[in-house]
Image 1 (tube, helix red, strand yellow):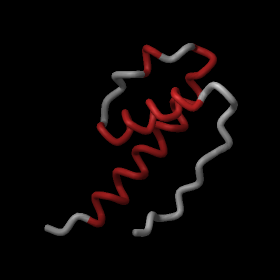
Image 2: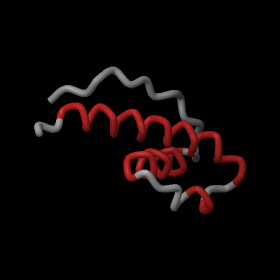
Image 3: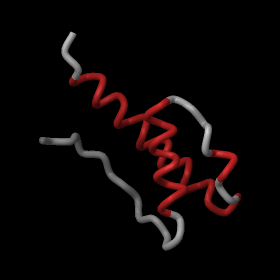
Image 4: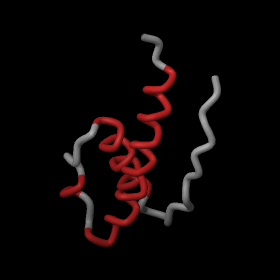
Length: 65
C-alpha cells in the first residue's frame, strides 16, 4: 500500500482532534465539524480539511472505472 507524498504539518498538543475532524470533512466534502472546533483550533481544522481534500483527489485518481 502506498500513499502519495502528502506533507502533514506539525500539530500542536491538544489540536489533533480538530485536525482529524478537518481531514474527515475534507474527504466527505462537508463542514459538519467546523462549528464544533474552538476558535483557537480552527487553523488546524482547516489544515486538516486541505489534507482531506488532497487525499480525496489521490483516492479518486486510483479508482478504476
